[in-house]
Each structure stands twice: as structure tokens, then as C-alpha cells.
Length: 136
Image (cartoon, rainbow, N blue to C red):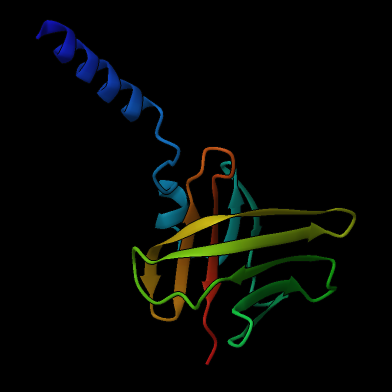
């Protein structure tokens, strides 16, 4: 009997420590900004004076780019975000003019404020948050 109890305790500890997802970054969720954050670093923050937003409902693609079109982030989702807790497959691509990077994974809607959605991918390899706006 003791062996079984020890086995279950060890299995429970292993499962809890081997969790493959992390909770949403508190700074990202608390922010009111439209932004891209990867591995704890804010890559871009949308500035309405020098940036543009775009949204294509047919392809579920969100775009944020600066007026010079050198710096941008694009998000393509498996569906249109609608409520907290919703899970979506998404690809995020961003560029700083000279290089382009991307992440792909399961994102969860962590926060909703009007037509703005904070998407979080807590995969330990990805850890990305991106804010998207559904334009009407």
C-alpha cells in the first residue's frame, strides 16, 4: 500500500512540475496597449500617431505596422477572438526592417476590452502575448 501512495505522490509532483504552459504575463494582461511581447520583452507597442492597424475578417489576420512599413507585426488566427478563455491557433510574424521572426502556437484569449483582445501563448518555448483589435 505504501508503494502505491508513494507512486501517486511522485506522479502528481512530476505532472505539476512538468506543466507545459505558463500563466499569462501579468504586465502584458495589465497593459492597455496594443503590443507584441515575446519571452518577457516588449517587441512593439502600437502608437496611433505613427502606426496603422488592419484587420481582415475572411483570413482572420490582424496587422499593425509603422507608417514607414519597416516595423510590423501580423497575427493570423484560426478564428476571430470573442471571449476570455477561447483557444485559437495563431501565427505571429514580426519584422524590424532587417529581419523577420515568427512564433506559432495555441493562444488563449486572456483579456477582452471592447473590440480589443489580449492573446497569450504560455508554451514554455514560445511565451508570447499579442494584442489584436477587431476593426468594424
